[in-house]
Length: 313
Image (cartoon, rainbow, N blue to C red):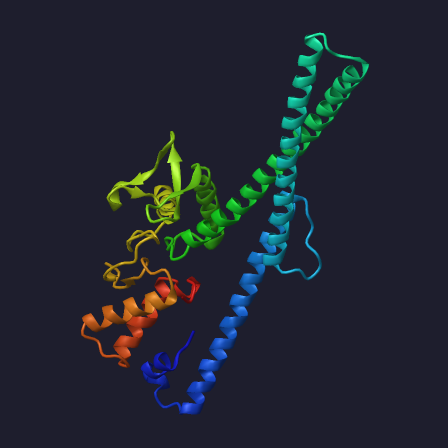
């Protein structure tokens, strides 16, 4: 998003009045809100479809995704409660059947006792059957729901992994798009799962022979999706390795000036981070904010790193 500071830092726009600057920032804000809103709508739409496919429970008209997911989870909890209730019934009926069988075995049973035993056996069989069927249904729906949510999270991770990738100019976009899809599918096949990050959260990791795949270039930290996608593309020979490829897990302490002259911002996770890193780098190079050279370097790095594709903050 354009800010008053960014606009005034551009020498070409230095003559704009306060009203014009305000109008530009407002237009930029509205445009960004529209783009973000559309993207959020697409994400929630995909999540709605995944929830319905996994649970078999349809969304109600204009029901919000949050309310929809909450309702589905509530229905699943109700089924889980039903499973628990049937489990209790099975335990009670089993105990009663065993008691009656004991009475019969000791020869103290009359016709009424034998009738009660027969009824207890019938009730136990019916409840056991209901329990088995309901639990199987619940377990299947729970597994499908969890897989759908995992797939959504994984797809989001893979989308982030492609931000900032730079292909060799010799390859047309029609070719690189196909190769990129192949690389993403290969990485998705590397047994991804969320593991404990040591700080009470979860982090996406990839497994090989039951062990976490670790990157020797990052002190054996788990490979990130970004690193694995870049690794696959480098192996295919289509990635421009003139700029250092870095995972999104840890931002750069200092931007890197590459051989091609551009500033590497691949460690930035948001546009705000990228802007701060870029400003510090340019100032450290002795450039003055608002100068033509400053703005040229700023615009080039912003474009080369595809910063516009990152979330705002």
